[in-house]
Image 1 (cartoon, chains in turn green, orange):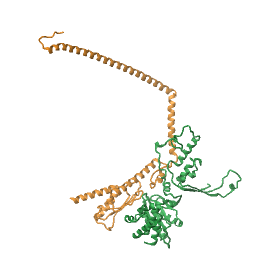
Image 2 (cartoon, helix red, strand yellow):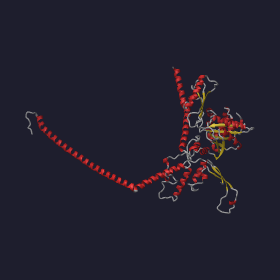
Image 3 (cartoon, helix red, strand yellow):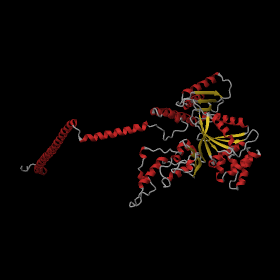
Image 4 (cartoon, helix red, strand yellow):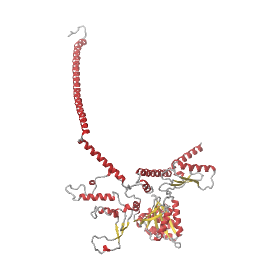
Length: 339
Length: 261
């Protein structure tokens, strides 16, 4: 087994937390049951790793086996990367999509190999009709860099692919081309949507986040829903602003729904607008050039935070549509210009 | 009263007095019965009498109601009565509701919520029909969904029920409109496996539009194999997948039986 492959497998296994090690090794399915049973997983991690490398050598692990292990690790640790979303567009009058996975893989690999000569392409299919693709980029003259791969998750027979934001930006056009041609599309466009949470991106893009459907009998009157007020509270206590509270609750519920929001960490607004002021003769108001600024909202769970703004009394309801349109418009990067 | 006959023995002398007492007793009971019957007849008469009174009262009430109705109808034709304004209000409310519903359906319709799988071309169907003919939209969507469901069912059944005849995994895609598999009629036997490739270009259909069956590993087929290959192609084109395989297993069983005998 090549020194570089051994080193790569070693570094990959070292990244895996001990409590996940057996699960990931089983999913990898490269080392046999018998081999795994010979390993004492209670040793110090370095010793376990050394033993595992030795077993991999016995089985002559190749770079593609190592790449599979890397994909599995990434599937378990999706949140370590920030994912972009690409949308592909079919040409006019194109035939029905008869997606053939074998053809797709061959075509995709060929396009990259023809352009770059040195590239490692690996595929791993999942049960939800998605295929994970790992690309380690090289050039005509240098071997592929296994430590800075790009990952792509493509949902076949849909126009959407999710890619890990790569450091090596120069390869993005080629990647786009390979995806488009192999999946028999015409054009590829990057959406203004980005997040660490692949599941949430998928939910937003496939419009699957609002899946609780109200049936005819489920409309409960507002008073019965907990408004953060204890229903069993003393009846001598009256909330003076109960009407306003109910109005806010109603508007929040209409805007955000009753379902859990998809998880995003930020929303970014790039403004290029002229200054608007009520005061005449203000220096800023006389500027011809638009002002440029960037506003970024961050949160561990941005949409839930926005949902709780009005009920918490921090903002007025209804919130600005620029904030509430995020899942609907499938964007969290906005450019706002004067019309 | 008869004197006891001295010629009769003791029992019979008792019989005389006793018989008389018996006769008296029956007389009394008969008269009791008669009076009871009379009483019950009287009671029945009484009950019937009250019933008659009730029915008469009811008849009188109904007659009065009919008269009143006729009078009010006559008045209605002539004037506007208070009863009618209530009816008018109800009708207005209904008409208003109808207008509301019509208004909702006339606004540019958009899909608010759906749980249709992402590979069903919902946007295409909506672009074609949603604004112009909602019935057609729903019908078309129904066609796509039913056809997808049917194709998926066939593929699932092939994988689960007929795995023994497959010599490799079934290749399929999310829409189940391209299926590729290899199979043998006699699993374990010496024959070459067949390769089948089914394309469903019509997404509203559950039968394939293109079928290719080839024999793996053989350049030129003997006539019998060629016939079989061609017949399989026709079968896959005309019958659902799992039914074709069911007929394969039945043929296989028939062959087994012939070997036994």
